[in-house]
Image 1 (cartoon, helix red, strand yellow):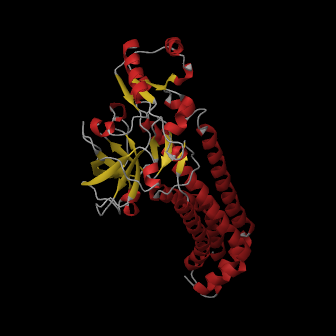
Image 2 (spheres, rainbow, N blue to C red):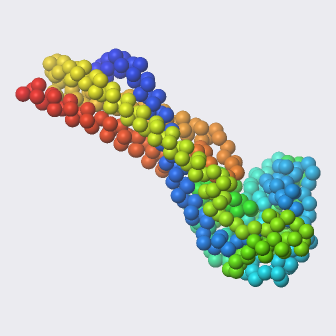
Length: 415
């Protein structure tokens, strides 16, 4: 390629090239969001196995539910309430009133504090948050493990961590953690929880997790632990939720009558509906996905039209430039390649700029998001590469009519 020719072509079309670079960047960002979002949306089906169709959730004192079972920040000042005795009674009462297979307490986030020095010094602690998946109902949930393995049958006191923790923890190595159920210990530098040994067995990349309400959240910084009963028993007994698994259909009337006898709100005992959680009213994923799809489609169409319009509006000028290059000694092939390469050095910087901007946004955004947002930013090399190839393919298709036309005209001129 003749770089002097490329420089002249770029300067001669400077404003147009700037617009093309900007449009390419915007298109790449929108396509990356769409590819990443829709790919993970399709994977969500794995997080809702058939076993979840027979799950019911009982909640006690729902007015305090968020504070008592949330992430801990809302209760740092007022403290938790201990529901252990009440919930034991509710568990026995539900077992005697309904034909159920399993009842378990749902813990919120469990806080793990690790001191590499082993001296229990708060200032040296590494702070982890994990969800407890050590229940049989979670055993069929698919997790995208990129290194290591999933727990074996009945294996407990093991932990899966997000890939972001690879530099801190080694796979297949056990670590001594201080176990806490509140964030108070970490915030107040008062590590008073029991000590437990957990083995890191793998790392996962998928940012979607099921929280203790069986809601799907996006979080690249929360791990998954499979705790044993004795370790779980060491946690403070303030869980106010029960997860009930049964093959028998519990009717709304039965649940309502049961709650009325307790004098509690009937809406606090309900059947879990995973479709409602991630596809219906709860997170409006349908509307969100439609919006992303429309924006991505608009970006692609605008870029495509700009390329096609530019090539045809400047067709005579481009053909004349090809002839001029041939007159100064370039072959027809070399002349055409100079024109095509000039378009590539405009499109490719735009694609790279879009990819870099998207990566910067991902790196600067802490993804601690309740619910699912298909337009949320998070980085995936695989999906970004797919988006880049799609944009390149679209640009190539948009140029095919132009290339064919110019080649045809040039052949006629030579003859």
